[in-house]
Amino acid sequence: MTDDDKGVTVLGLGAMGSALAGAFLAAGRPVTVWNRTPGKEAALVAAGAATTGTAEAALAANRLVVVCLQDHRSVHEVLDPVGDALAGRVLVNLTTGTPEQARELDAWARERGAEHLDGGIMAVPPMIGTPGAFVLYSGARGVFDAHRATLDALGGSRFAGADPGAASLQDLALLSGMYGMFGGALQAFALIRSAGGSATEFAPVLREWLGSMSDFVTGSAEQIDTGDYGTGVDATLAMQAASYVHLVEVAESQGVGTELLLPLAGLMDRRVADGHGHEDITSVIELLVGRRS
Ligand code: FVH
Image (cartoon, rainbow, N blue to C red; front, side):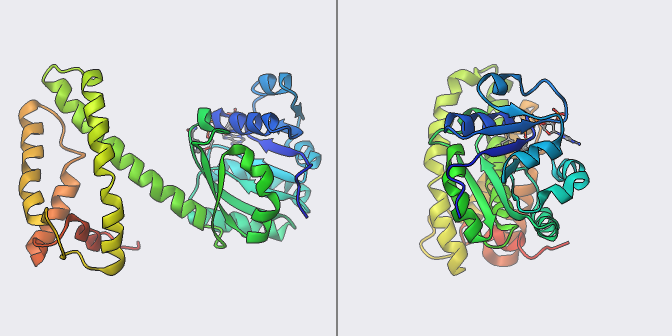
């Protein structure tokens, strides 16, 4: 059974929940919205959404229920009191959380007779409903397939796996890459600013450089999957560790913080000391994995 002609309930009208509801409306879906704090629904109601005074009434309005709240705790604060109303519903939780939280909610929802998908939104609110946005989903494949046509209103729908935690893991992996890039860009801008330079003028060359360096991801992934970090390396870890010292030195001499730089320096130095200086920087991953706390 599909929900192609059915409506969607959206719980949570923060920046992202409002964008999700707007995209469903734009796709022609009947939408019912609810938010803890009244007032955020006004623009959506003006655009055709229905609203309810309680989360329970919103759950009753549609079989497909999309939740986008601040965090896992707020999801339970909203859903726990109305758990019985979830029976027969399809709960799609797009709130950012950990894989463990996704699995916990999956079991919790199924105990109450609901189907469940966990999702990770790879977009900022203005991107929702545009070709640049995509959303990762995990859970039962059949549930994803049955509701995909509706969910496609948000952006590209990508199935991450049957483990309810799979979408969250990929989401957090992508965000880890993003924040690494943000940290690097901030360090670069800090150096430029420390010398009185213009971040705006420097931005195009930084963007060009980061774009070309992002090609590293493909080759690096092959090295990780094969475990061969030493074949055909033209920028050895020993060379990179030695030149990385300059990044730290120039930051210190310019009065720029080194907090973002030092962790990677430590890892590179350890790996070189362990006899892997001839390998690629990718081999540092061997110091990161297998550290389950
Ligand atoms: N915005 C973004 O760029 C990112 C993109 C990737 C995905 N994230 C995740 O989406 C979740 C929601 O983010 P948001 O941007 O909508 O966040 P806010 O604008 O701060 O809205 C938060 C909503 O959560 C409601 N809320 C918070 N605590 C509770 C609670 N205890 N009970 C009920 N509702 C709660 C809040 O309601 P109110 O304060 O208006 O009453 C908002 O509706 C998030 O997981 C991101 O990581 C967004």
